[in-house]
Amino acid sequence: MTRLNGRALRLTVLIGENDRWHHKPLYAEIVHRAHGAGLAGASVFHGIEGFGASTLVHTSRLLSLSEDLPVAVVIVDTEERVRAFLPQLDELVAEGLVTLDDCEVIRYIGRDDPQARGKGENSL
Image 1 (cartoon, rainbow, N blue to C red):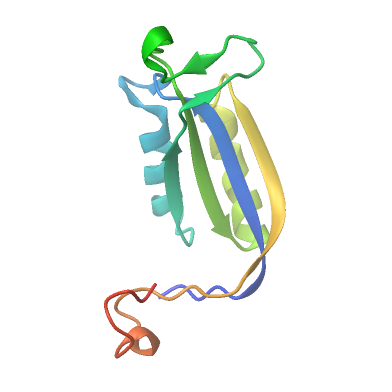
Image 2 (cartoon, rainbow, N blue to C red):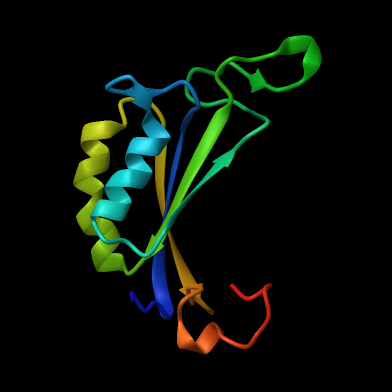
């Protein structure tokens, strides 16, 4: 099991939900590549409204339905591992925003970790 504690780097990729990589969602390809690279974890968050470099506002509001809502893929791991993953994003992300932020990991424990046992179903 990967252990992660203390200083880390958060990678955020902001793209559209309709962005594709070989006919499948780009966000799914990023997550699968992050998993294959052994990164600590990746999550995809679906936005309800936003705009980017195109300045076109995408929204989920009923009166102005959008077919390309914003999506954020967030990955956290050590700086070395995240920076080693960046060349894959260069290949994948043609349009969007990629940011890096320093962060501090307070707790990172999987369900099968012995430290998590006995703490109830709401354990991380």
